[in-house]
Image (cartoon, rainbow, N blue to C red; front, side, top):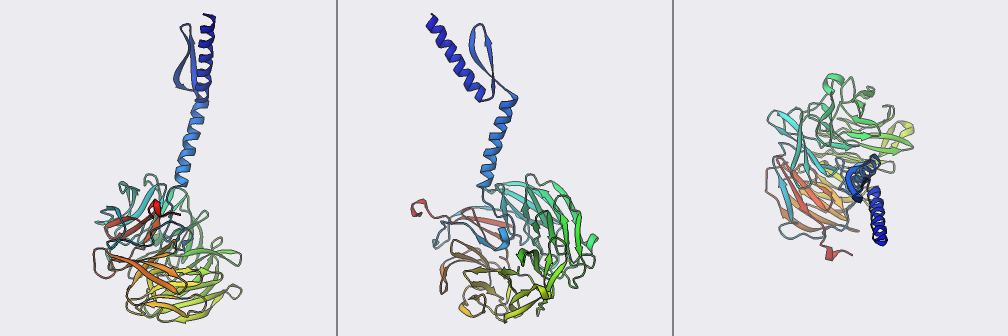
Length: 456
């Protein structure tokens, strides 16, 4: 009997120890030596919450992450590995499609296990969040729809620290809670800075650097401005620049020890101090048609910019001490429109204008000398991952190219639904083993991972 009582006591103590570790109270009664009650203690609740938060953070840290237009650093080069090096004749497996995304040309950003894009529905523009399975999570309005030249949304939501930042074509810049789409603040860039835009409206994918949202209203009351990312309040305004906004999305770099925003205006390439808004340097870049849209490509003090319709491409070398940049080389046939450019191992890749150079090119970055040209791909939007180039033709042909020492090799192609010129303008996104292709109302998501048996 004494032995049985000892066993019961030991059992009770063991149960108590387990329960205490789990954060539960133990209630003893004459008939129960160690009944466990599911009422949590405050310490247990805190420990459980920490464990839950930790698990959630681990999940978020491992989640696909492409937070803005052209990804982290805006290089448009994805860190993805173990991707298919060749596709079936009809393309890689289609995981799902989502429609309606709304009318427009916005791409996708990805964070917190969600996919973000934007589109126009009737008379309003909306920011949209989808799950990774393609289910609509929320949809929030951001001003009036664009109904003039090339109707529809232009820009991709920029994710930063749990928030989304999105500019519509008439200058409404808004901040949303990424979890639920609640608007946190909005600024009318036209009313506040007299924003100026051209025939296609404002098309800038805003960039967040530190606590600042940087954008280019291009107006006399604010050519380039910085807003507090938490409140939308103005931090600084640059009015010394004598030029208006084009259609370019900027990039932030550190050059000569100074963090600066690089962007193309209608007639000027500029570098602006992100801390103060001071114009650090500028150089004339006057296109034949007012279409400056290519994000500047920066590397070790050099900047490549281009514009279509035979305006050509130019490599500049920044001379910050002289407040300017000098021309290293210029080629009329490297006249990118808005498909992006890539720098890989000293080689510059891009797609010339369909009404200008008409070719896909690979040239030496520092000299501009031709390495390889192709006249079959047509005008494409670019992305890069795992040594491969992803090229989406503006009418719907999707191509996979291998990067080679001698340039590139077309490996695979498949045909999406063929559409009129300039229908497929959103740039491909490679993230989480997937390829995201957006065309107007439809978002298509493909599995481009190598099969496990093919992995090293």
